[in-house]
Image (cartoon, rainbow, N blue to C red; front, side, top):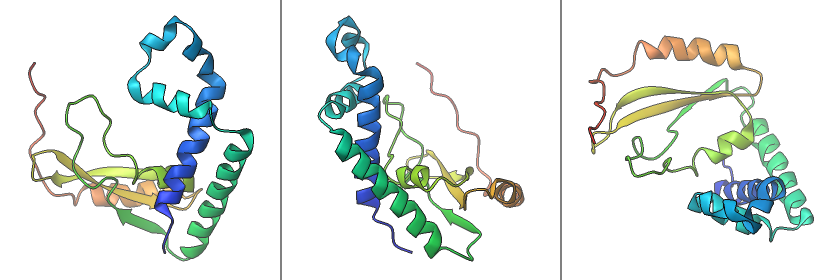
Length: 161
């Protein structure tokens, strides 16, 4: 099953930025602008330049991508994949790499991430289990079975500042 991940990420950001600007765009014109985080500010600024027609086209693309994805996975009950290419993000103020997670938000099915070892930088890794929309209970049952089989690793220590 192939999905146009780049297209999905682009369309998702188009809709997200358009909706953020519609809801919070007034913050660009007053003193609250100084309170905004750089990525959110960039999203608002991008969103004010997106037309309603562009947002509608992007939303339609996402609906089509979601339907095609699940249609291509009929008969597959649980998907096991990596949620991100690396371990947990460093403590640098970011939330980490999002492009692998964005399609799953669009696909609208339940997700569960389980700890699954440590990466080469000593950061916790995880595996993600995904299922068709509405299969929440089945996914949780499989996750509970796998949880006991996850690789053992020492609990990460919080850094001291």
